[in-house]
Image (cartoon, helix red, strand yellow):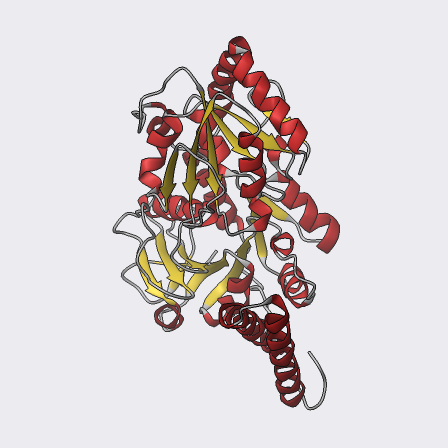
Length: 413
């Protein structure tokens, strides 16, 4: 790969030469995917590579609880687009794949951390088509799980380098509980209450059906419904404080309908707890049912209730799952994962830089989609009834359709 000497404007090559890398992030917010990129950026910079974290929107400061070494440059999309040529620019979410071509680079990569098509349950197919289009491009693909590699290969014919997630085990194994434990089984519910796929409402329905337990809730997006009963609620908590929360709990109840990996489950297992999880795609990358956690079918409330009852009533089962959980997570290291990423970056060919086609023809669809979402959110805020909201939304939909047709000379996007 062509790389830069920090004292020269000309690229040079070499096995041990520093690589100039830009990661394009969708924004500065707390999330498993963002956390992973921060880990890789720090480790690559510590190895002597030149790393820039670019933010496509919002603040250019690290989100709450995340830090990077001072050697990592933080920049806005406008700033990074005017920097000298990078060796490789890497998109990290589907929206960033549309803007990655604005960053000057010899090669382009795409770190696909989930099948984001599953995030959208609306009747509109535009979003899913926009996401699929990013999977069709000639990127150098990186993924954290085997199932994502299989998806890209089978559905789009794209090979991908698997760069597993890691964990800072020492941060979780040495934490002091945020509150002392009592005799009751303490269940942790964690996630974005505003995202339906996280099934936070289902998790609370399950805990409500199990007597004689305590419930802690970490609302990562600040959403807390009045009917969700918890003994302690932590809203938008700093990620650095999470080890203390895990240490105070016995079991994490994670019933998401869709997850790529679920870093919180890994963190809970490392902290000395166990978990009851739904059979989301990717759970079997590190979870063995009955060995280190209990797995239940997706959206099966009765099975989840039964699993919690087993843990409440069988101390030996709980103890065994906890002990084996810690043993299993010892295999996951950020340093080892980063070594794999570094090797992959060095192996990218120096010739035939990726010809990422202009995705401009799809940008109008992306703009229309964003406008539509904005109109829908506004109609929900302004309306007092579902009927009125629906009428407002349909009027806005018609407006977007007319604008789209005008922008494409009469052809709808």
